[in-house]
Length: 161
Image (cartoon, rainbow, N blue to C red; front, side, top):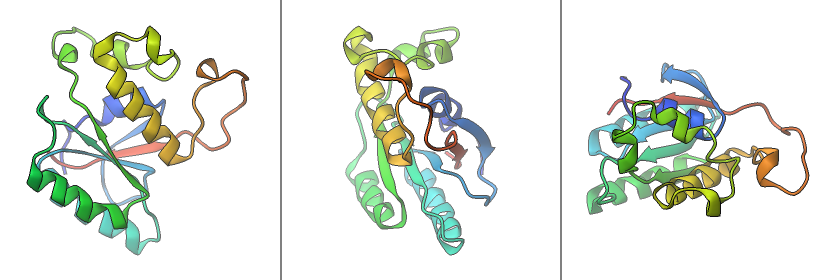
């Protein structure tokens, strides 16, 4: 498996731990791209994890602004029964123009959606959905009352492109 699918970005967005390239060890979130090859690899990885009795959340990073194609959408549906959830993260064009895009990503969960730039709101919504699918609560600053995390920080692995 290889990098470059958005694992570090996803880990930063949901305040998770980036475990790098998937090696077969259990992870809470498996990250792949919205491409046929990457989804095939994600399917194999979810099968390996299912044998061990673990169903990760699969985070699918959009390859471009057009969204998933019909074949990709069909593959996503095939993945769903073998995962806790499948969350598609939208493409964010502005990150290609920033020198350090992770600075833009880190506070997505801590700021109210209305305070975020419009280009980040869909990604922030998907990141919140992903964090909820893992079972980890949102950071305190987005809620009315502060409470400690009920579960450990989510671990995240990546599949190849």
